[in-house]
Structures are given as C-alpha cells and as structure tokens.
Image (cartoon, rainbow, N blue to C red; front, side):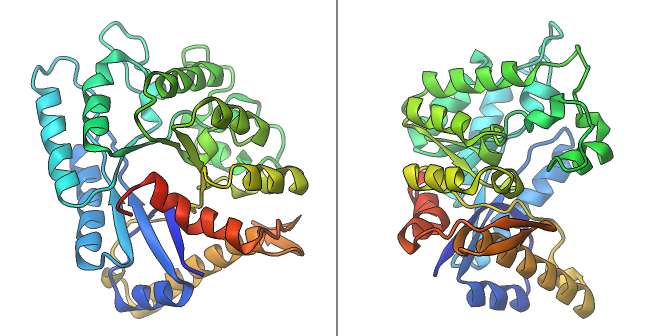
Length: 325
C-alpha cells in the first residue's frame, strides 16, 4: 500500500533512506517551522526544498514565513515575494506555528491571534495561488491542565518543556481563546483549504473535531504526534470517526530528524533508520490491525480499518488537501 506521511521533519538524503521509503511505499511531506531565529529555520527549510528537488518521488515540502514585524513597512512585500519563490520552487503548502497565539505579541502587548486582520495579505495570497494552509495553533488541552497524571499522553512533554505549560498562567491566552480564533479564521476563509495539525489541538475528544468538520467544509486535520490521544479513546468511537470523515483526516507522524543522514556515521544512520521504521510500523499497526497493538508502550485495541479507508487516510487525503503532493 502506498502512503504519504503528511507531517514530519526528516532529512533523509542517503540511499539507505530511499531504500526504506521504497520498502514501505512512503512519500514524506517535510514541514517548515518559522521561529524567531530566521537563519536557523530557513536553513532547515532549504533542506526540505533540496530533498524535494533531488528526489520528488519520495519528498515534498511545506513553506513558512517570517514572524510578524509590525514596525516593518516592507514586511508583506518580503513575505509574499518569498512565498511566491517557494511555491514556484515546488512547495505545496504553507504553515503557521503555535507561536502565533502563544508567543508573538502586537505593539500594544496583546497576543497576536491567527485570525488577526494583519495576516489577511498572506491568506489572500494563498487563496490566489490555491495553496493550502497548515495550522499548528494552540497545544493539547493538557497544556492548560495540572501535571498530575503520568498516564496522560502529554505528561512527559510538559514535564520536560515547562515553558510551554500554561496551567495557572493568567498572562497567556486560554486553550478556548486560541481555538476560537482558529475557528473564526476557518469560517472567514471558506475559499482557503486549511489543515489543523495535530488533530487541530482537539485531540482530547474526536467529537470536538467532528463538530468542526461538520461546520467547516474547507477544514481537515492531520494525526501527527497525536496517535496516543486517539488510542486512549474508545476504539469503536475512533473507528467510526475516521470512517465518517474518511476524506478529511490525513496521516502524519511528526517525527523530527533535522540533520542530513549523509552527515551521520554508518552506525548512527542505521540506528536512526531502525527507529523511524519502528515508529512507522507501530503507527500503521494501530490503524490496520484488528488485534491489540502497542502504541508508545501501551497495549491498545487496533482499529482494523478497511483498505479503502486506509487508502484515504494514508494517501488520497494528502493528495486532495495538498494539490501537487
């Protein structure tokens, strides 16, 4: 079965990488992440661009753009020129990251939200170019909850990254405020295809995702880095959710390997390949098997999805929602 991992960051430029992708029938969609360190994030984006140019059968890429500079009158000229060059060079999507809504502030000190009219020139341009927008807006709901349950899928992350843990912090927007801003944007832009990364930060309940998919025909979600959130919910409910919205859910892993494989030693490269193959095989088993499977060390019920549903999840939806992929 052919598959597209529609959300990850994998610099696999070695023939060993291509051999694994051929073995698994995989194409990879590498995602740019704009951060305050413009040189660093652009260098990573250049890797994704290079991989796609050298091996378009196995790689594609999603562009990004510099964070807002409200005091720069040339900001949008620079951004739109850069995006035009990226799309002309083969990028088939554009991403906005969680720092919009959680980090970037306007001159008045308030947090800039994704539906702010400031971004309208970018959204207008994406619609004009028929380019999809990938939104990683907000964080899992656990980000705003106490760190009390080690079994929560996000306990380890927020324990190790306290700068992103928002519980008790009144100086940051709430989960509800960030999600509401995203929903307003999707409603305001019916002509723009929008994909909510990481189950649209509604990972805690597929019913909440379903509400948005019912409300917004221009909205889809990817599963990246949220498989355990699905696995912790009732398997029958999750199966029905995926079957009902079979044309709106894209498979993604969100694995992060930013260094080119060619820079690694043979043993380092093999260690990485072993890890990424194990990750993919674990994730595929959850969707495909009717038996109990392991997801990140937990025994959970596999979904046993039918082949035609799997083809939508793994392949056709990525091609539908990112034309050119």
